[in-house]
Amino acid sequence: MHHRLAFIGFGTVAVGLCEILLEKAEMLENLGLTYEVVAVSDMIKGAVYDEEGLDMTKLLEMASSGEDLGNYPTGIKGMDSLATITETNADTIIEVTYTDVKTGEPATTHVKAALNAGMNVVSTNKGPTVKHVAELTELAIQNDVQYGFEGVVLAGTPVLNLARYTLAGNNITGFKGIMNGTTNYILTRMEEGMSYEDALAKAQELGYAEADPTGDVEGWDALGKVVILSNVVLGKRISIEDVEREGITGISMEDIASAKASGERWKLIGCAEIEEDGTFSASVKPMRLPLSDPLAGVGEATNALTFETDELGPVTIVGPGAGKRETGFALLIDLLNMD
Ligand SMILES: NC(=O)c1ccc[n+]([C@@H]2O[C@H](COP(=O)([O-])OP(=O)(O)OC[C@H]3O[C@@H](n4cnc5c(N)ncnc54)[C@H](OP(=O)(O)O)[C@@H]3O)[C@@H](O)[C@H]2O)c1
Image (spheres, rainbow, N blue to C red):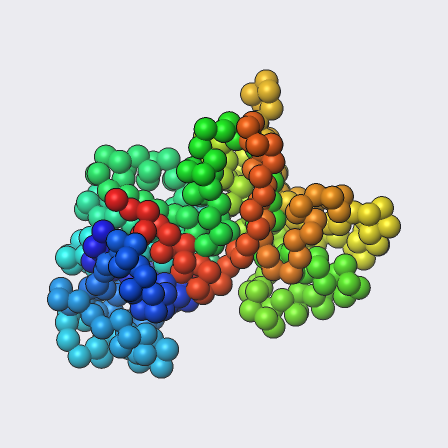
């Protein structure tokens, strides 16, 4: 499929996708994916639109050197996100602005505008999917376009596609997983004897944790992913208020030592389950896992998810949950899967 791409947001993940598209152009063409980038609109980096296409190498050079995209040699400059969606000749929007899981904005407005305008959307932004996944999926169907969001859970580790395609034919009755790399990194360091405070500082130094780590350590990030998986994979219609939440800030060195002495390990687990009588429950909380559990062996900032299936029993996938190329790759999966 040929795409005329417009980027809404041109930060880390957008750059990751551009690098892959450039480096693997030949392989992707063999897989049926060709493209041109016609527009980029970013609140800080600037905006440029050229209906004839933009030079992606030049865009990357400008973004990395901090030069305003408004200095691009050709095209129309300064279009905001909505104008870029509604007034350009793009047919596929890449929505990679910041995430706000409480309001879903501004990304939900972008996604809706694009779908209503008959454009495909690929996005790694959890906001719209946490708030409105059923509505947006329906809107895409009504407009005969596609909305891909593989990267909202575990970045490019293909969790949603695994459930949708590869495990199709199973009843998936639940899942449990390590869905936040920062907290897994901190717990891994604590098990080696480092204090929570030092482990958090190290996570911040490595760029895993933000200056305000609340979203990670209090479980909000994992909570959003539990909502998305419950709605997309288990067919529920829940919101963040329906999920019990507890972060890792209450775990002491004594708790870590006590688990270790019993052959167990603390992990921040996001999970949901549909019981035989139909009862549904979902939570994010620290749990002590026996070392025999595949999730117990997943350390550092790595993520993992186990689906509970009727035909195969538990099926676990392990992989990165963040990163420039790792998340850019999720957008690529969605582009490749469009028909
Ligand atoms: N990085 C990862 O590893 C990862 C993993 C999974 C999912 N994600 C999700 O992927 C998305 C992109 O992440 P990222 O790491 O690339 O973020 P980023 O580096 O912060 O880039 C986002 C860019 O979008 C711009 N922006 C924000 N609102 C905009 C608007 N209304 N119109 C145009 N541009 C706007 C931002 O400008 P300002 O700085 O001015 O806001 C920023 O330059 C986020 O939703 C994130 O949660 C990221």
